[in-house]
Image 1 (cartoon, rainbow, N blue to C red):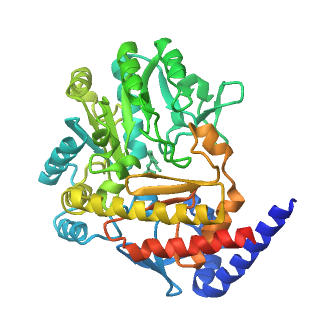
Image 2 (tube, helix red, strand yellow):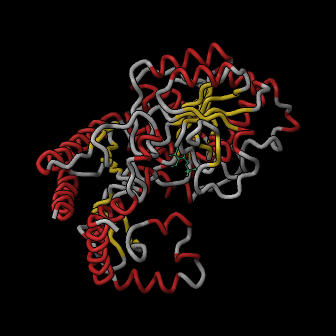
Length: 450
Ligand SMILES: Cc1ncc(COP(=O)(O)O)c(C=O)c1O
């Protein structure tokens, strides 16, 4: 162990002791939970939170939650985007309450689905929408439709992307540029190179080589990477991507599930993108499970004309609960009354404040890290220069350092996402909430410097 590693282990140890002392009730629940929940959690990722056990939530409202030990927290994770609307926003809660009393799911359409689709079309510019319960499902359906209409086998993704638990997207490049299973990929159904072509982000030449083989049905990308920290596109990248997809007959699917943070119509509207498909999930239901994918009129027509009515329920697209009355009521209310233009202006200004706060600490302490912002999402990372692609971002990561910073923030009453160092602003977040993080970060960087 280096001196820095020993020092970090000591700092983590001290934070763990403080965490445990302050949270006897969470600890008690964690011990009890392990009898019937592997790792004491209902979903495996929840073991990744820093600290010896997870914080159990008693209630969440707006940009805060209170744990079962009565501690108030500023929530900058916001359910890793699922609660970007703020927890239980009033308009969504009212719509959901009313709908619960009127029928949750009938496998028949409601007026809310019509209004929600109209609003998504207005914002993202593609006219034909379908709903799912998760962004993962939306991406899976997009891939199926793309293979179906193009007759091509492969999916192109970006190295170190994340699009949900989508088999085709758990592929990465090895040092020799070969497509291999991403580290941690559990039980891949087939070797990933059978289904997937991987290119580094921001690499137009690699895109051209990959697409010119003529076997790629769809290129599935986040417009800016957000799942390995934020990696912004270089000027001209999106224009080249659009042109190359058109030239080689590949559909272009833009996954806005996280990048919806860029503004009311995501990066698609903010940067004038022209995808064939837009995917958006997590945020749009204000916390109620919902996601959607939108298609151009041309693609939607190709799908409709090629699927037999008799087979529409057995083709691998759709789901019994997808597009249900409750989810679409939540989407309508969240889009039209919560995640409005005015809300985005407020959220973005706070993300600027957060970024300025972090940058100020880095400058004052001479810490060679950088901070990046995309709309109302911001993130610091452990390299002096912003990365150009996912591999560069991954190389700069430091899991132990991350664990310390997240646990130290948690002990100061600030929750960051357990994956990298992301902070998200909601319509309910305040300047005081942001400043609480800046104060905690000042202390953490000071402790690291000794
Ligand atoms: C870009 C992107 N797409 C899709 C998903 C999958 O969302 P879900 O877990 O709700 O299916 C995620 C989740 O983080 C994501 O970041």
